[in-house]
Image (cartoon, rainbow, N blue to C red; front, side, top):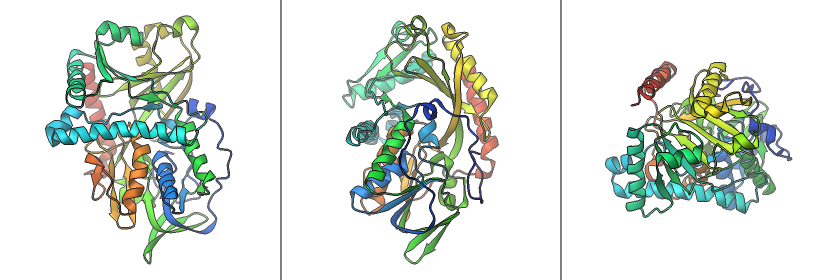
Length: 441
């Protein structure tokens, strides 16, 4: 189950095994469920990138955090994403400059690049085996002339105003040579982006915590949270976590129990689905993704693809419901062969999905609810790098620092209006986006 409150002892898993789960290294450490009363300086709820990096920062600063998760390390979006490490926000830099000024656009640009550098620092510093992190670059592929004009304008700002020489515009022919598809009218290449094995990365962060003596309790949902004196008591099925402070790091899975009620209305979970092909033969593999980068397109209901070994992973948004959808996977496979006709007849071996945490303004949110409670969530589908950076930043914020957060800073969770009707609203918006994509707008 991907959503809904659970009052029992476990939150069941309903999603199909992913390629990442099949190829990940085992955690190889003790992460048993919490039993009895456990004390900590900080309770960290959520064992994804945000929670794990927050706990690492807290431990580095001499505190004793304890991490709990309803399922396990990287079970949510941190282990189900496409493994694309990007500097991007869902909001474009030209839009930020128009709405908030050039200085803020520059700060957001810097945050994006700091986030990618943070992933590299964490992988190298903790010697994370199997992460397979590569700064291979990302190609953003324009599906029509309007989209190409928009991404070209963004590239111009990054180059001319921010002196970013890592980005350039590709012609239709260059895009076709890079991708192996004639479906795009051009592209922009950002070399300061990469790819990673997302579940190995999450498990590597967890191993680093365990090596520092920081407990991680899997299969331990926070079922209720109570103020107790100057601190908090987090109730779990078999005990309690008693702490001075708490960090909510639950992102798109913030509606699993009532304990995360303070942040649940800040995000709308939106399912993202992925498929992976069988290993491609040399003749076929040599015609697609020729530079080994990650690739995304500019449609509102975005599709993306990347190699893993000699496989193609192809993903996109637009799946609905609380479980994997055969129709969503079928639509993905149809889109894949439409973009890559040479892939017709290629067998798909893995199908999986996860929840993207969308926010009302398409930006992550980082802030404090009160002096003892902080949160970071809402990465809008670009969370590997930004969650890795914001985990440390939210830990610093909780301890009284004032880290630079740009437009991500908020004094309270920004709740979604009419939250009760979010599901039909998401369907309506997605349908409208699909229509606009279909007519080339």
